[in-house]
Image 1 (tube, rainbow, N blue to C red):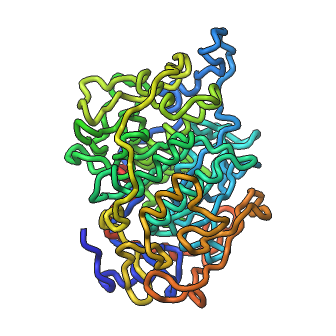
Image 2: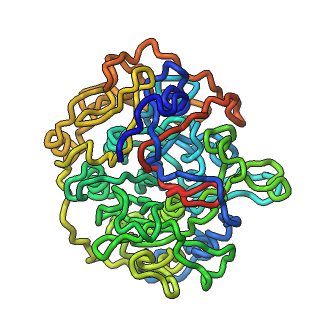
Image 3: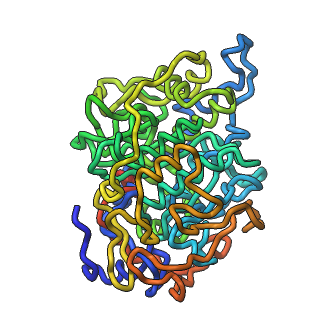
Amino acid sequence: MQATPFGAATLAAVLTAGLLAVAAPASAAVGTSWLSDTWANQTGTTNLGGVIKGAGADKADKDNPDDGNKKTGVALTGAGIGVALIDSGVSPVTGLSGAGKVINGPDLSFDSQATNLRYLDGYGHGTHMAGIIAGQDPMGTLGTRFSGVAPGASIINVKVASGDGASDVSQVIAGIDWVVAHRDDKGLNIRVLNLSYGTESTQSSALDPLAYAVEKAWDAGIVVVVAAGNDGFAANNLTMPAADPDVIAVGAADPKGTVDRADDVVADFSNRGNAARHPDLLAAGRSVVSLRSPGSYIDRTYPTARLTLTSDPAQRFARGSGTSQAAAVVSGSVALLLQQRPDLKPDQVKKLLMATADPIVNGDAYAAGAGQINVARAARAKTNNGYQQVNVAATGLGLLEAARGGTYVYDSVNGSALTGEVDIFGKVWNAPAWAAASAKQKSWNGGTWNGSAWTGSAFGTLVGGAKTWTPVVWSGRSWSGATWAGRSWSNATWSGRSWSSQTWTGRSWSGRSWSAAGWSGEPWQ
């Protein structure tokens, strides 16, 4: 898809990455890689508690079926498992503000240069995903306590998208590489990587650098869960990196407003794929209720996604549709299995989930994959110790430009699109050199990646009570040749409960990447 010319949407081009003010360094183009395109037409309400019950996640027993012992009667929570969320940040709303719940990894987004925006979710996508995966209300919460699929797990927040969702594929790849390099850091134990993201890459997964990055994560023992895409049954492929055959590609099911799965169907926005590559699994993805980031771009733009005052007097929640939400359900489920059996390899986890899934009655053979995830059954099934996937390995030697798939960010001052074989700093992309370094888990050197200092090199002081990776002030120039220094950033502030500014207007895109179909009824990805 051609990049939208600068000036076609003046405000959008000026509001860099959504959170940035007039002199901000980048802005998104028309469309999105976070597969969240329209949030205006939610159909019904799918409460997360019903999703968890339908998947049997509330009945997944802690006992390891491989040891021959009887059930313990103790439910799995994902305790001790770190789930890396590469997304638009996480806001410390109730349900995600408990001690140790969210650990801030590096902020690699354009917002990272503003202390008032760093790590936080001005877009509203990441917070919604985090809530589904591992949200947990504190004891004593009035009314029904909100709980994610794996309430005992922790979220490692790796922010790559700004307040309007703007992010370049180079930022996502850098984030994946960081997760692999730091998976075993003290207190992290990253075993799952959630990517509710995808691009319309124009090259095969055997060449695509995004595919290569997730394969290296998979090889390092991290279960990578990726949204399949929200282009519907007409889409005969999956977005990248879900197109990579190693990872778990997740499509969306429509529960039709019931817990009983007898009436469930494949959501009409979920990518169908083809005989060679289609969704591996499905999970609920239609109008799923999770936590809002109050005042974020999505929250202000799609107010009808919120629940009614009668059902949600505190106005904490919003509905979102897409394979994004479905992927988050699966990521939380994987955390449960890894708590039960910490030695499971990624291939074994994928096999367990696919072998124990509930088939969709009369479902399309491609779009439905193996069926809907059944966590309770997977938790009772024995490990196939000899199972190993046999797929053509990615090389990572393809083009960065092809990986973008027509989704671009723009310099908000001069309108220059980030295209070609360079990253956000304008550094030349040397695919063979990066692939070799990534394979050895050495693409990061402290806070430097691809020859530029993107972030700090260690965890520093707590931010808002959360363990937090140190930032760095970007020096030098961006891809457009403009300097980072002296830019004016948004004056939006997080009050502790919501964003205080309405600076999230003017989002514009040139592609679809973040996997969400809608915040009021349509597919997000």
